[in-house]
Image (cartoon, rainbow over the protein chains, first blue to last red):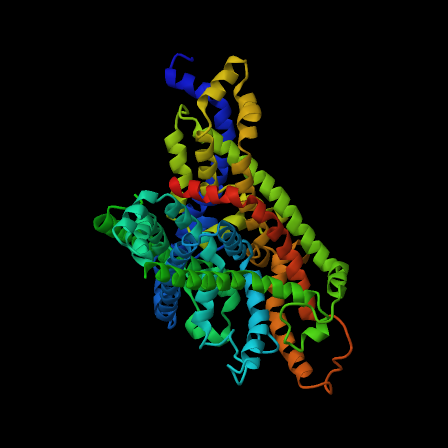
Length: 305
Length: 298
C-alpha cells in the first residue's frame, strides 16, 4: 500500500498536516464560505434559505444601488476621502523617515520613534474620544489655547462641522499611522550604502541634494510597492474612522460606501442590496490594483505580481 | 557656507521633530491630567499640563461600577484567550508551511493567500457568522480572529531562518517531529512569537466593532464598545453641562467638587490605553523586525 513514493512522503509528514488542519478548516469557513456567499448579491436573500436556497434576483440590487439618488455622492465621497488619505498619508511617513534619518543624536531618534508608534496601538474609538475632548469648543485645550493667545475670538466647532471635516479625517488618519508606516522607510534608508553619501559629499552635494539624490532613490522601490498596495483600498475610505466621525451634520460629504454597506446591511437588514454594493466595491478595488500594478511595472520595473 | 546651511537645517529639523513628538504624546498626557482632576473643576477649561484639583475620585468610581468591571473582564478574557489560541495555531500552520519537503506546500500557501487578494466583502462574511451561530456569543470575539495570513507568513519566514542542522542533529539524537518542534523550534522562536502576540493582542484589546455589531447581550460588551457607546452620549452631555458651568456659578455651583460623566470617561480611557502603552516599548525592537519580515515576503 505504501509503494507509491508520494504517498510515502505524505505519510511521513502526517504530523505537519495535522498542524495545518485547524487552519485549513478555518480558512475554508471564514474565507471561502463567504466567497461562495457572494451570490446573495444576485438573490433575494432570506435567512431561512441560506446562500443557495433564496430565489435569484439577477442584477436587481445593482440597479437599485445605481438608481439610488445618493449613489454617485457615496462614490465621490469615498474616492475623495481615500484619495486624500492616500496622497497625504503616503507622503508623510516618507518625510518623517527622512527627517529622522538626518538626526545625529541616537537617543533623540529612538525616543521620537517610540513616541511616533504610540497612536498606532490605540483604537479608533480612543482616537475619536481624544479628539472630542481636545477639540471641544466647551473648555477643550486646543480652543482654550487659541482663545487665550488671541488667535481666535470665538471657539471653533471642529467636529461635526463640514468646514473642518476633511482636515479632521485626514489629519487623524495621518496622526494615527504616520509612525508605524515610517518603520519600513526607516529600514530602507538604513540599508542605503553609506559610501553613496560619502561620494555625494565629495561631489559637493549639500544636505538637501544628498536627500534628493541618495535617500529618495533608496526608498523608491519600497514606496512604489506600498503605493500599489494602497490603491487597492481606494474604494474603501476606512469604515471604523467614518462610522465614528461622520454624523448627520457632515453626511453630505462624509457618507461613504463602506459605512453604507454596514448600515444598509446590518442596520436596515437589506442584506442582498448591501452585498451588491460591497461586491461592486471589491470588484473596482481589484481592477484598480491590477491596473496600477501593470502601470508600475511599465514605468519603474517594480510590481507586486 | 555648507556648514551654516547644515546647522540651520538641524535647528529646523529638531524643532519640527520635537513638535511632532509632542503632538504624539500630549493627547495622552491631557487625558491623564483630566482623569486626575476634579470633574467639575475640569469643566472650567484651561487645563493643560497638571491637575488643578488632584483627586483619585474618578478612578474610585470607575472601579466601583459593575458594568465597567464586566466589560473589562470580557476584554481581558478575549485578549488572553484569543492571543494564546491565535499564536499557537498560526505557529503550527507556519511550521508546517516552512517544511520545504512537505507535499502540497505551494498549494496550501496559495490556499491561504488567495482570500487576501479578493475578499467577499462584509455582508457574506456577516451571514457566515450568523450561520455558524457566532452572533451574540462570546466566541465571535475569538474564533473569527484565530488565523491571519500575514502573521503566518511572518512566523514562517522566521522559522525558515533557523538552521536546518539543528533539526538534523536533534533527529540523530532520536527526537521525533513533535519533540523537535517543542524542544528546538519553539524555544528559538521567542522574538517572532512576542511580535505576533503583540499584534494580535492589540487587535483584540482594541476591537470595538465586533462588540457593537455582532453582539447585543449587554454582559458581553468589551470596554472599547462601551467607550464607543459613550461617544455620542458624552458629546451632548458635556456640551450642555460645560456651557452651564462656564456661564457662571448661577446655573450650577462649580465650587462643589465631584466627578462628571466626562471625567469618568477619561479615567476609563486611561485604564483602557494604559496596559498597551506599558507593553509596546519593550517589544519595539521585535515588532520593527516583524514589520520588515512581513513586507519582504508579503
